[in-house]
Image 1 (tube, rainbow, N blue to C red):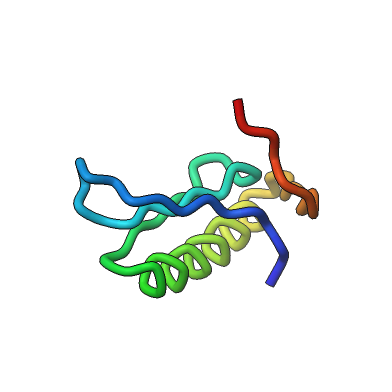
Image 2 (cartoon, rainbow, N blue to C red):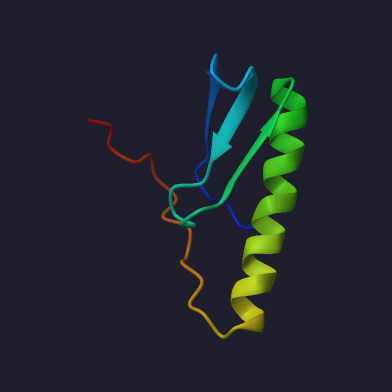
Length: 70
């Protein structure tokens, strides 16, 4: 598994934990617990990479550092 940064937060609007992978555009998942959300994002990352390979799209290398928050 590549080491992409993930951001996890509680969404009151959705009533779930939401997880985003900023380095992989559109790669998001959710779950009722931290554990479920993390399991779902690992599956989403795998699917994102598999789809990118299928369409010969570029796959970003993990930056390996924290992103800067504004």
